[in-house]
Image (cartoon, rainbow, N blue to C red; front, top):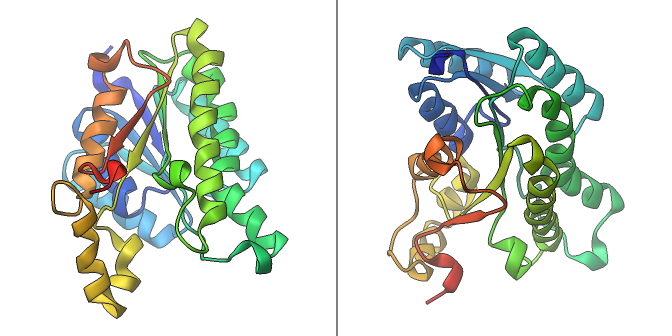
Length: 253
């Protein structure tokens, strides 16, 4: 089997960290399947990857929609006969609401975006991961999963704490099949995720590096490099771990 025969699915992969992960895994030799909800951007990203010699395709579906996730991941698995890597990259803050005024709708949306999506995608992928080579799932948690997030981000922190726990639970559940499950915890990464505050409050954005030991923000490529390692055979004895990618931010200074 060549690396080209191996298949990686990356959710939320039409921009930011997700696209860099898709690009890196593509350069590692995987056929990469990008997911997103912006179909035009998805098509454009596939073209960009093809121009770099990467075999890629795009599946548009909402990771909070159980039926859509299940049907699409199953279709991908059946098409290729296997899934080797599932990267549950999709997620987000969803906005800010403090608990007193938090609507149930907002609560459920944030939990669905960050935690339910991991469950739906992982469950659907497991039968095909069992057919994979050095198969693994890679999830995304956050410092907010430990410190509960900033003002208004409490439910985001709660959802990411859930991702930390489900990563370990999945690792326990799937170890007998040789399927590894790990997570990465990116710190403050310079992506469009922070575009609004970067434009409206540049002084606040610039100050963030003061809380990072290495004195700078991370780059998406630096997260992609760790995901690439966790997916590789170099990480074949690593499971149930969460890797902090934050330049020491988690410890505070």
